[in-house]
Image (tube, rainbow, N blue to C red; front, side, top):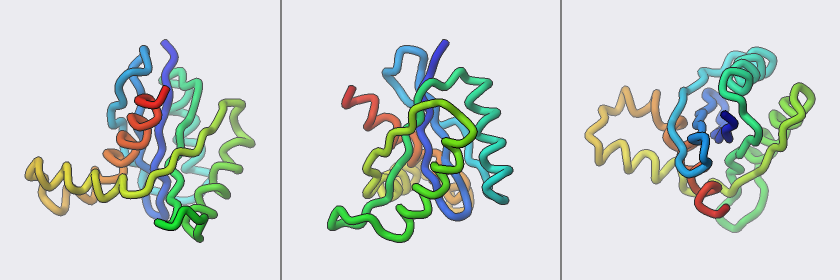
Length: 136
């Protein structure tokens, strides 16, 4: 069954979420602890293959004034490398405040600070993917 994948790409981690086969809900899948672009892409390719991913939704960390800053440039650069390895459409989704929302959700769920650090990017990826699914 085909699915979409949501990514929250940071300097240290990549949060990964995957849709259900009906493209209605997003579920957190995992947090990739980054080593280098080549290995990070290799791990993503494995997830793409295992889960029959047909579209990737990537959170684009725009500035609050809607401009593209250094972090968004890093995301574009990484995604260009990823595009060289796949023929799947990559869509950029505005992700402003998703990490804030994700952290609030984890705090409200009484998740300890140490564990929150491991989960926050995966939860943010889930928010990014769910926002896309809700629009289409």
